[in-house]
Length: 59
Image (cartoon, rainbow, N blue to C red; front, side):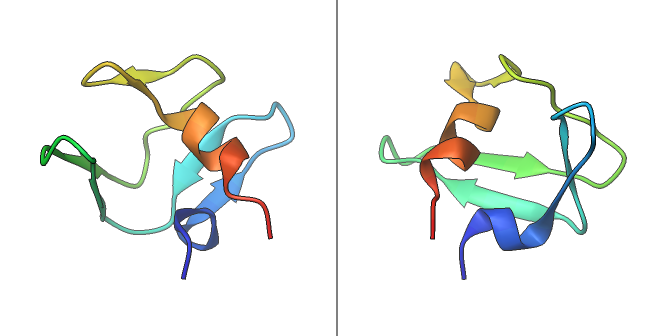
């Protein structure tokens, strides 16, 4: 399963988690995303553009 499957994409191109999601970064750090947080393009968490990561997850 990819992270996009656990997210909702809104008409304004923002993303929102459907549930609590933890993403393991290659650096060993973890990012936890929670429902209710809308992430527009350019949204940064721990120096990572989350929406860019989601855009890279193409089926």
